[in-house]
Length: 432
Image 1 (tube, rainbow, N blue to C red):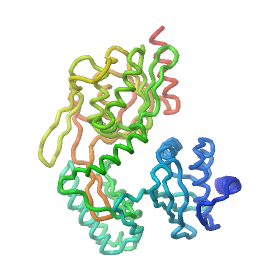
Image 2: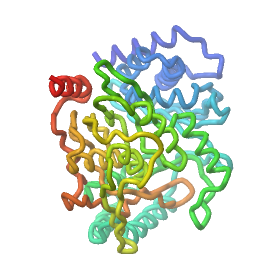
Image 3: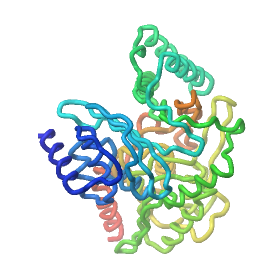
Image 4: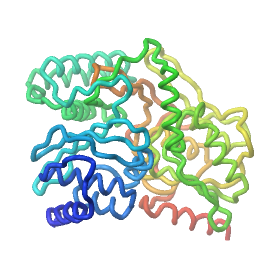
């Protein structure tokens, strides 16, 4: 059944497009590439949903649509490598006119998309490809273990992870891995088997980038590129509206840095200043900056409020996070607040949810969240590998703990797709 649907989807989409962008091989992987480009460039939800269902593309439809809006679509430049299991290609980002390299990997019988990589080639970046040799493997593993021992928030867990990886390496488990993406995934899985830490990850890029400055501060050009990227994404703010019954609805999918995105958050909150109740949709919010958590939270309180603490192992310090003394415009300190959650609600979005739940300021409706409470920083392992290291842990001032590994439990459980309807019913009942 899945194979027939997969074949029909690919055939249907290809019949409706003549690719002038470049040659696509007449293979299974080539047809998937062509179908993906057609669906992606259409920006049509139904066509994307049909494609995702048919071939098992490992990304939610909402994320694909958001990515499409950022890029403006892709034009195929070339296909560098293609076989029965994978295809590597270059496309051009229409919004920035920048080259993007990609790879699609199929597996299983019937074949389904098991892995994808879509990556912008940044200024100064050099395409090195996906292959890795023994020296690279060992260097990456050594660098990752050293970083964990120095920086991971729990020193004893870091030692246990390093010992487990060393044992696997001595047993030869990594000797046959010649693909960088596969190595990164394997190391991530093995580290998480020990730590159960969903923030911990080894990332791989087929593009080598110059090392960052010693002070880790971005260049003025880098800051401007980031500012432009946030502008294209509207800082993650997707929808702000007033629903019937004077109920405010706010949906944003990241907590971006307030130094850049504070004005966008202010505009959204000020638009909702006169609503009777407020629904904040965190179902697709994957996290971001604790500073933006504090910024948005300030609009929901009338007095200074202690939100969260972050303990950092490396310098044995604890930083307190409070609401801010001032934010522009009116506050929504008296309106009832409902937060919608899903299993994809993660990291800073969970902090926002957990803080407001612990303070009794919001009713949580939806699914238990992802369970990532430890902020991370990227540590370069070599030109293509990066380690996302959880270096600190949240400590809620009320519960004295956090949501790591457990997620935030909703007050009212509901499937994510039904959470908004459920929240509106609760608001209506409260009004009666």
